[in-house]
Image 1 (cartoon, rainbow, N blue to C red):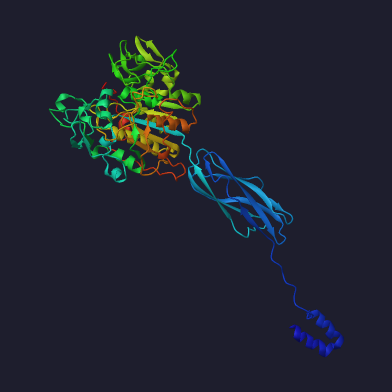
Image 2 (image 1 turned 90 degrees about the horizontal axis):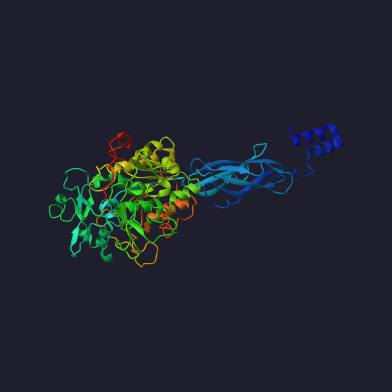
Length: 587
């Protein structure tokens, strides 16, 4: 019954007194009391500080719960979502739940933690709250952004043989992308010579199978005072495959692109360097010393330093380093560039190497190589690594460092990777057959490199590995870019640095994609990159003045997903090939 009908009945039956009581009961004396807003709370999150961290570090944010309308209760905080790479950062709170008992806001410190395995890139962290009644904040979840720089945990240096960018990377995709690759050059009489195609230089009776000198004298000829017009003066052998019998311009050649497609695939996807110079102005033996030590100086007690460099390959014997036969020597060069003033020396040196710095920091390393005593096996010329002893009548490298860290044969790297035994720093040296050395390779070099890259790319190591691929010297092939030559007689390296361009390819989930590096690099840059990555001091040789390859990497980018590099031969081919190792010639 409505209030009006109730009043009518009351007035008719009960009289005035009852009517007054009824009016009071109906509340007709004024409007109803309004109902206030429900108690609630808001959530705010300060920007993460710092906003960018290196993987393994942490960042913090102050989370504030502000009550409204008399809210009291306990608000539990959580990171309801983290988007980005895997494994993702983790969240923790200094206080959760936050208890609100009055009008004051409550706070908690959010810590977002990463590990050394956290991928680089941008992460969005969503923070929210909920109390015992499942009440969410009125302003909803709060989003925070964190940028993480990845940490490289493994570096693999793959050293190939004897090529220049103009000779090996006649790749139209790279050229279109800005790589400085010439299609012609000028000889010593001023003629412009168009580069012609040639195969990779496979062994056999192929008339394209020849080699060019890459001795220091050949460097001087091609450099030609900085004009780069003397390549035609570089000696060629064997005579049957060289002028005047064949190939009127054997130095002015580029490798058929079909022979080196795996190299092109890597260079086009990742970073290609067109300003990588070998540090030394000579052939393989000193070049391999520079990639291990940043020098080929014969430093030995009691002298603290030497201003000489080993400049050439050995003479008087076919075995290199500290196990070379008696009478074997290597030509030295002095700061004036003279190879005649210094006395040739036995090719066994003792100076600091990068491996010493790695050992001091307990950073693991391995040097994969086909054989001891090769001019490409750099540790065999370092006395404190080789520790030469006569064993069964033969001078032999011995000792813990040699036995544990110099790995023979080189294809063992293809088993160590899938077995989870990759060292933190590795050097990988080819056998002569799968090098790119003219006249001695069998065309498998690009597949050899691709097999190592594919093994890493298809393993857990891919997530935090940098693969640096370069070539030990120019091989006598034409290149149009003149190096910076130091001949002041005083500066470090005077008389012997820097050599000609060699190719550089950097493969990593954090290599800049399809990037051409025009920054000047040399072998010292690789050493400095390793020193920087593992927080090592400087050797003080080629690394001291070199850059650290940082322009080739973007550690905060979303990591590149690996795609296998197509190649004619796979890892099984190299593991199962039991042919005796073919060591390089002595140039």
